[in-house]
Image 1 (cartoon, helix red, strand yellow):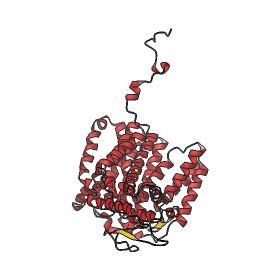
Image 2 (tube, one colour; image 1 turned 90 degrees about the vertical axis):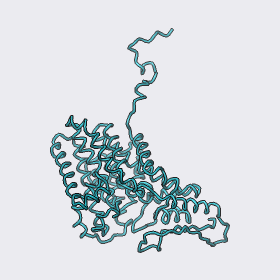
Image 3 (cartoon, rainbow, N blue to C red; image 1 turned 90 degrees about the horizontal axis):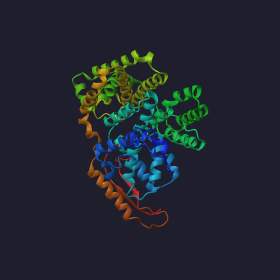
Image 4 (tube, rainbow, N blue to C red; image 1 turned 60 degrees about the horizontal axis):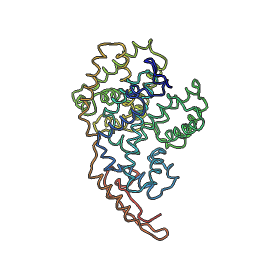
Length: 443
């Protein structure tokens, strides 16, 4: 006969799960990714999925290329002077699905990878600061702020910017131990490396890890791959050193101020000649908190702030020197993607600084919700950056439906083209618009 369990009997001893423990929300990177995806979806109501745009390169340099020639070799084609393996590989894999699904899957994959990028910050911040609540809180603030646009989060070709972020995050997260998982990990990291010129910025980190880290041969392999990509995967152009004259004002205005108040409010502050002043105050406060807390920080925290500062300054410098942006950089419509990476880094670094204050000040622990709410409210007028044109999306849906219903049996070598014609900015080395040509002949 089974005895009656005493009051002290634990659930684990009886084999019954601790229901109370299971019902308590346990923050982790999976939850972070799900919540990030939900917030990204709410910004545009998943319109980029249901009414996909095939925006610019997604239409002509991904969809058209792989629809007309669904060949593995096209993964390594170069566009705008460099190879972009990640978006090309993703487009190649999506190309196995029905043509009517492809535009929506481009957008869905982009939103998913963006959410994954933000969610990886949870792992990094939790690993450094040992506080899951703060890590999740920081990630949700990060994804809620309008640091990007519909191009950055819903366009497959633009995911190359997130490849840079993921590379830096993975460098400071544990590497898999099992041989099979480690090989898969190294393969994925190499795909990220061979996707964007900015990945060269992680080379100093890899070299440092080769000397100090546990996985020396792995990071040595990645550093070698990065060097090969830099030498043979890119077309090198002269750097525009004159753009560095705009570096201080861009750092203060387009990075510091715009990260906190958003691009529209930053523009108004700029008209009132207050944008640079506010940026200076924000950076000065952050630097002051870091300086006063430096002696009490652990080694991981010091490394986090050091690498974050390097990431911000380096990505901004390369953006300025790589593009002859000049004063154009200060305009509201001045290529916001070129300050996207430093703003992401600045936001995370700023949230970490606030966590330092949170741990030290009882008053701030009660008032930080007001500060977070104020910042989010200030940025509510920038939701337009994430809105897409449903009429354009409908034209794309009609286009792929026509392709699906009108595949032709043609003779050897015969071609019959059907093109979705639409205007757009003209690149010097491309035709006059971003039209999408498709060969109706069955392959």
